[in-house]
Image (cartoon, rainbow, N blue to C red; front, side, top):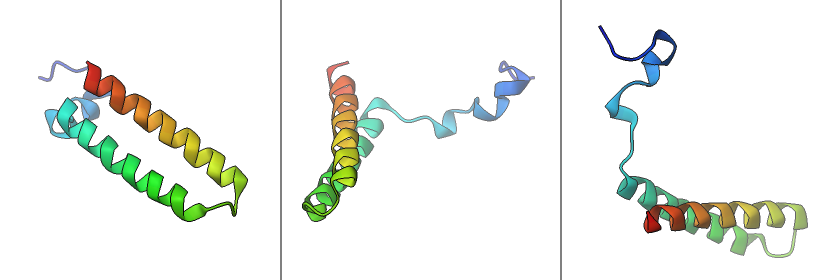
Length: 69
């Protein structure tokens, strides 16, 4: 019998969990990809630029939080 409630049983596995180091690495990859997309965008689409800048800030904040914890 599992220790997880029936409603959470599919999420109750160690196989899909990341370590903090793995999460930080994935965030760094996503930061690099987002920064590259932002650089390629140029001045073409201001709305897209704002979305990417916001995403980049959020990714960097999450990475900083992981690094500081």
